[in-house]
Length: 359
Ligand SMILES: [Zn+2]
Image (tube, rainbow, N blue to C red; front, side, top):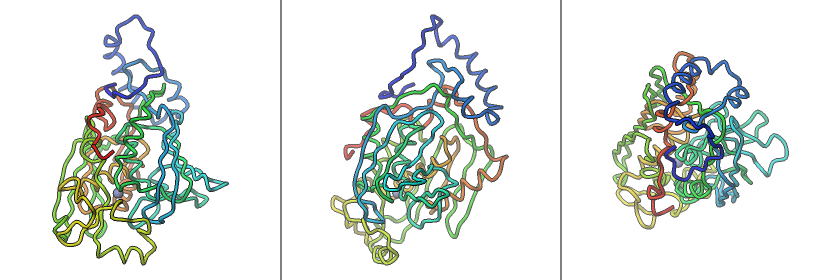
């Protein structure tokens, strides 16, 4: 795989040129794709793989972060650990003794106005997971255990750049289980208030976003990205969360943004950017909305092949979109990724030179 920091742990001792096996393997996996839903994760894990067959990944080593939560203001340390195949992304509250694990899945997302919050059946919650989820999706990491010492993932600088840099430094390890992806099979749209989000079929993940704010520092912005070839790391990961100064008092009155500062969020007032140093990109706001969308889409439980279009959408709308998708069995399906598909996923083809200077 063209993932320069990926460290393979399995070897192919075959004397046959692996490229000669590719047509056979592709046909085999297309056949497997059609019945993969009926296979248990254990069976999937036991399928043998060849060196050029896309497989699941995890981190090669532990990586840690720490800081304040944007909304609670609570300090927390985060330790991201390698995890076995088919484990998925799971958060673990280390300050909670029972029922500490919460899977980062769309079905565990609960209503939260300005961030993505997950909750398990026992009521254990983890807030503001979207930026670290975007970094995992953007780096092509499929399995991880994320230990958090408090109720909220630290906001760091408001972007996902530090998470991405940490994951790239830790390295990514391949596993022996095939990589499954979620194919969008027909258009699905949700509209909530004035916001709309849509998923349509596509052979790789595209994210299109449009926002419109009265403040001239933001105004009307739209952007479209094919998420292949390191686009997330290069174009989106350093874009910070943002808000209007007029909203800060209202958020704090609701107990939100208690850890927000001019250093971890872009705050605008009319045409003025109040945060020191100004914007990292002229259209940093829409880029951050795309970052959020990637993180929220990763709660699907696997990479999505489809075109996401968001208009004024936010975390709740994207979660409603995933619920609508998975509610309709004709709208989606599992597939086992072939080499061509895997090469188009957001984690493929990242280079150190893609990492923005702020990371
Ligand atoms: Zn965000």
